[in-house]
Image (cartoon, rainbow, N blue to C red):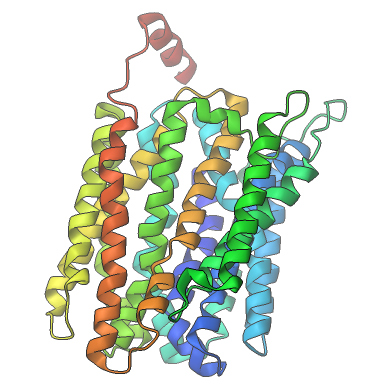
Length: 466
């Protein structure tokens, strides 16, 4: 099952990293400013978030297998449309279609695998689940650079077609049939919750994306969507907590589990560090270091290798020592390894920066596995879908709201010299260091060393395994 889901998920992960390295080129090819082209990534993330909350409801109505194949089909359609886009506006709109499919796939993948694992060996399970996220930073930027070097930008999206096709074929063959019985109670969609939560977060992210120039947060075009979005999110929180007879769009009562609440909060900070830098690092190598898309992609390989190298050990020690220690070390390492970028100048050696990227990848890989595994500790089978949504949404919000590109856009608004641009990137990386450092003491809220089950439960688990 894991291999089948990973093949399809690779299309989503590669799509994010392939496009991130191509933003600078897309701005030139489509004759649009970088602030507009950034919405190719931001709009995709927004669409993912808007769709994620309905994944649990859709699974209860269609079953995991049918929903997975349908989401792959939507992502495939969006990819083909993106390849046919005629301007920046069309590309952004079609990226939203991609985001709808990806928004269902990412939490659903974790839900299906965690439900199959039944709470056993969570660390090792997370090491398998995070394989696409590990391969994406390694192969995605290089693939994007090669495509732009050998062909045109349309192939950035056509490369998703084989992953989607093979992933759908494998899913039809290998995923178990879990279609709800005809006489089973039909889950009802929380329409009110949907119309409160999704536009609320979209408005907040839109407001933050408008932070530029000297006006800062004082401009009405920023304050209005920010305040309105926060009000809608507050309204959803109140609505969800009062739902007693029928389920809310996302069950916020799950935050009573300290492990899930702390993992979601830390996931938000991890999203800022991971997704923000995913957009910031290629731009840094292109605008400050003078690299083309392929060169920037090659320079990002060490970070992906670090993430990949940390998977097995992080899963092993999460099961042995608990999420708390692994996440604390991971965030501390990631913060320390980002400092060289915050203090770098245009003359800083690339060997030092690539070594820092490798160490940063090791830290992020360990922290991500520990956080994702911690979120499911102590949850019932029926609670796993909502927990999967909460963890993915928290990371996506962090990736959108806290993207370092927002800070970069503000700090480099008046930069006209290479030194000024480098200083602007330094400020942006400094914010990334700060957010990562904040997460270090918060890791103490995560579960510690796992408690071994009683002998009877161990015997029962062994018998079940046999």
